[in-house]
Image (cartoon, rainbow, N blue to C red; front, side, top):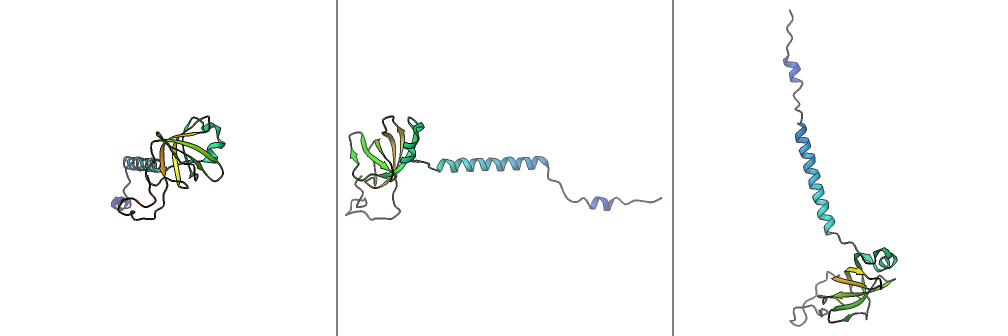
Length: 152
């Protein structure tokens, strides 16, 4: 009678299989992290239309959008309710009426992004005004605590 040793056959199977549940949990966790990362990044990106894009798309009338451009030199008029000015992308100008007084370095020729609604009269009515500025540091003017060109 021949005796077959079962030990060599068992020794060949030393690799352990990963349980399906553990693999499923890992896939779900990685998917959740990816979704959260994407949601966080998409919320921090700011998209805006140029003045030419806004004027060229009549479907944007009455819809809330962001509009970006340069403040046209000589167009800034401060009012009791806020400020009126024109934005341009170098091709097309759009009149803007912003409620609230702008703060910081808002001035002629400055880059700005406004958020609001384009009316059927062609006037962009804004309630949010963001001013683009350079990264260059300028010391305060004569103890005022503000840079020399900041009049806001």
